Length: 300
Image (cartoon, rainbow, N blue to C red; front, side, top):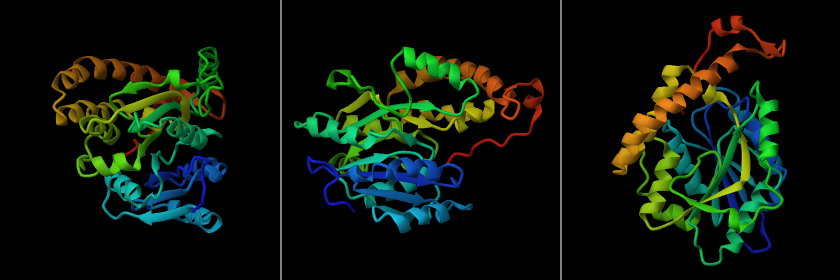
């Protein structure tokens, strides 16, 4: 573990739950170890992976003393998350996914923000996530540039004025102060049929803490969830109202069922037609590709 990850003395830990992530975990770790001087420790939690995930992570453990791998035998993201957050040593603990690609100044930006928050106004924070590897990605990248947001990077003109409070957190790019995690540790739900990041953010609010959203703190995320079938997608999105109902946010939960889920499902159907008709070898769209057999991503 590094002795001084930041001039302020703040130490940042990064927790990465993993389950069968051999295709993406190396890219995730490569971006983190490139800024290891800003990170006290990286805790990878192997949650019963059946592929080469553990073998790949082991190569990083051998090369970097800041990288550790622990195991969690209870299957489920919530169990792996808790094991990682409990094992982390930093004053601040980031929780990302195995397919998250952080920007080159991601760790420093988090530490700079927390150092500036001398009054501890913010108990937790999160940033944006932008899907990479989509067939229409080049066109969307142009739109993002015009909107002055580029995935995986921070805006050079970002300031504290950009920060705004949010009710929930975004699991692919979120940070909890250690004190915050200890305060909500026994309150977070261990159910696997809810959005654990939404649940965590609501728990932070229920103890009187505030969640900050940093629009300049962007990361890349895999579009794997976008590639799932409509039934699986709707089932997955039903976790949102269920999480809101769990926290007695009944009006929001009903609104999510009636308004948000139908809207986001319609967007998903249109997006799915584009994704599944894309031929990566021919670099074009073909209706024949819609007939290919697909395997939906499981809930970790």
